[in-house]
Image (cartoon, rainbow, N blue to C red):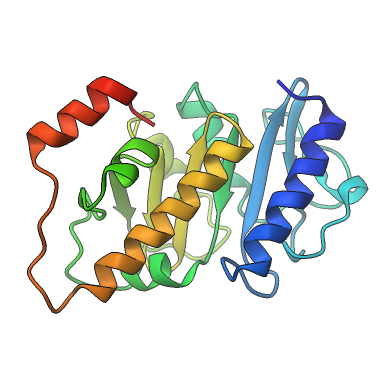
Length: 212
């Protein structure tokens, strides 16, 4: 595990990269990263494009605010992944355009809303569950993630956007980027008949590379 100083620097660097490339706008989105004695989290109403490493919020594993600015109101989403999925070392929640668009579509399969279009979405993201709408900051969103018993590394919040967990910050960010790119492909290809990976091909990927 990286030192807290390294983790803070990584959050600033990767958050700015996401912001600069349009994965978040304004003060949308929030990111967290586990450290030895707690969790670092982007502050509420902060822009991912201009974070101050020293002002990043730090909370205990049970959600108590230790230092820095007040944590994101979506702290429930992050804690739910840390508590229900043992491999979680970081969580990324974005309002990225295509994932959010997909989360607004009425004909998406809530059990598996990102079909296996490419090997990389299988390898880096896995199956994605669509969760029912609740208002931003509602603790019920965290309860729904806990209810998945750690079986998913990523979810789409209906009419809201993606939440992605990873073993470390880089993995979570890369998976969130892969998820957005796949959503972009799915929406761009709506008017044509698609060829998805077969169950056997997905099984081969999981057997070779493991699950996210």
